[in-house]
Length: 102
Image (tube, rainbow, N blue to C red):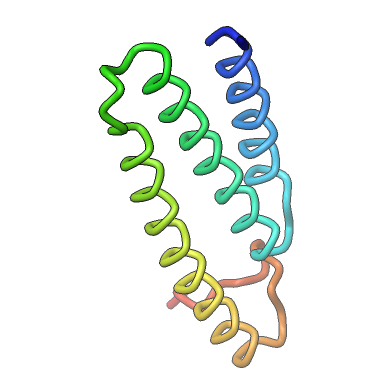
């Protein structure tokens, strides 16, 4: 049986990779993928805590499904926004997108 510490270390490593990706990626699609990695890390932690500390009611799995649903919806909205920005500017680099400037 794998102890809880291993799941938490895996979650911390994946979270760190996700944060690094959000802060260093130039492309908006890469940033969205890093955010998805962070949300998947939260799912790992929800399920691990439910298994080791929960009452066996499956509440961690329910929260993980909720996070997956929200992540899918946000990915769709994010991709729609990226497509709209690309149609206007022909560019998806995050530092070059300045549509909100006066």
